[in-house]
Length: 267
Image (tube, rainbow, N blue to C red; front, side, top):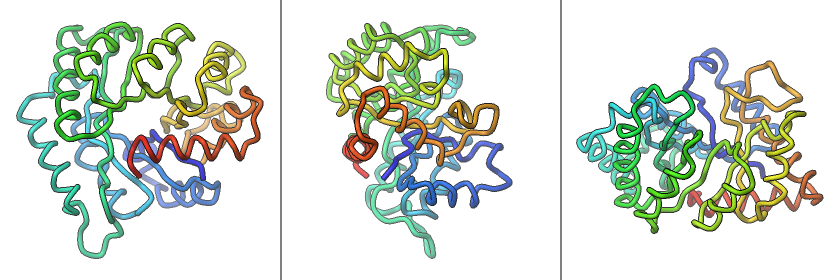
């Protein structure tokens, strides 16, 4: 089974054909999808698909660009949603949800690449969401651009919180620090790009039991589909490339990444 651990199926790009997108993913062998929230709107809508489909899960969290909306009051609201979900409160009559469907906090973190949001504001919001994850007993999906050192320093204060650096595009040195801190590393279709040799080198370096696969769709379609809208079915290309760079049979890589994702998210 292939698992897309990071998709954005509530984005406008999927509005016209979401049912077909999900069907194509199933036909490609994608058995589970994490539909990740990143702003206030998707925190409200991401759970919709997870209630409708038993193989789709959701998250709660705000991207660093949305830091101004992160307040203690909102975190309390999120915690109440997580608690209700854990008790089965996310399921509604006629819908397919069963068991916990909110499986992580995120995506959240720090983004210094464009730095439109002051660092201090981003750090404040990140810390509040880590406190929520700690309180809720959920892992965190981390967005980090040009900010790995600060992210890892902050994570030291939350040593019991499990985390994954999603859409990893950093170097081997930073990957080593993430691994030393106990984190997971997730790769996207970027690993298939001709000029992404550094990412392939990193994937070769990271132990198989610390890797996850994702699309980050609708963005970052693998080379085979580059220029088109990305979608969960294409996570298969990511796993194929990880398998190739590690010189492993596809079935072994697929099985290992499935185990990693299922254990990390509890799905």
